[in-house]
Image 1 (cartoon, chains in turn purple, brown):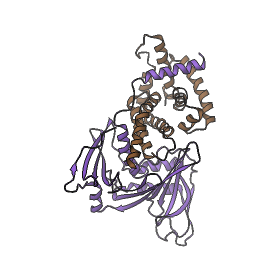
Image 2: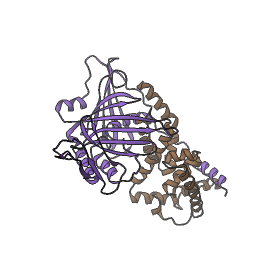
Image 3: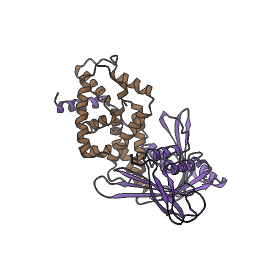
Image 4: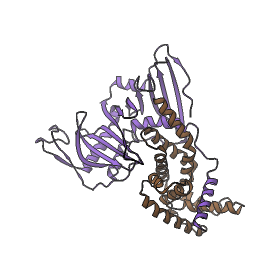
Length: 289
Length: 172
């Protein structure tokens, strides 16, 4: 059989095997719902390819870090810690996500600004008024019913004086995550990325929003993700995502600043409880794609 | 602005969703997994919408990666069962000889290592160039060229040994 005949047959065979198959209704809507949540809670590091990370690599924390706490040094001299140590500290820090409410502010070149508050304990996130489409606010949550993942979104449109609720459900069953998702992945996912060298501890540091921060980075032909963690608390302070153009040297950058605040009842309520102003009219949610 | 962005993404998903599901199915042979992988890939595209110079190569790459992840998530037992089903003599017999040959071809394709399978599907079914295939798989065009050659040779071997016992461990 010639190569052209083989490939012709292959095309016909695959056409036949996939005949009548296609995207399921609502895939775009679920992508949007999931994407907004991923933006806040996970996925920015997904698919980052392997980069070499030498076992026992060291990270030097330079400069004027405070004298107390992990990563600082009384003399102001660089303190050297191992990559394994940083990995463990990051994992531990993210493992305590349930004790925080996370505020993210983004300054995206193409997407404009937004601020989102996330409750890692419930997986709910809240987008502030005026920063959703038009002058609106939204509360989005994820939950499982009989093994099927559901997404619920409540939108309040202050311009129209309306509000709506939409509920989407996955087609197949899945298992709820056992670990709380945090920006960049679950603690164990992030730890695995570090251990496998998919995320490289570069040894660079910088002042990020007043934090002495350590840089972690991973990349591919398409994308480079840089993850800054506080050198004292090892909590994330900034995630920078660069998309590289396929046919040019252009790069598009988004930068999300992370602010982790101890859980306070007012913050928990703000994130989890939709507030419908008196007199607002309920309208149907936008049709599914 | 955001509504325009959403409309553009929705149109992208409408136009390309079918093709992405079929791509995933060609790679894994499981419709449910293909839909899940495509959903995961579209979510990734949505996250980066407006910042990709051309979203389709990114979407293809995301589907290839997500499909591979879906396959890896299966237990060893599930993988064996699926591989066995793919080569079982009890698979439905197709009367039409041509159709039977095509069925053999698909089964042979699914016994290739994942990377070779992806190269074949993208190059000859999606008819991507070496450069486009390289972008979808995160390799260089040179690597794709040699991978394609090896994958075709392996496909021929698999076709010739279609009725022979298969080492299911090789099907990852």
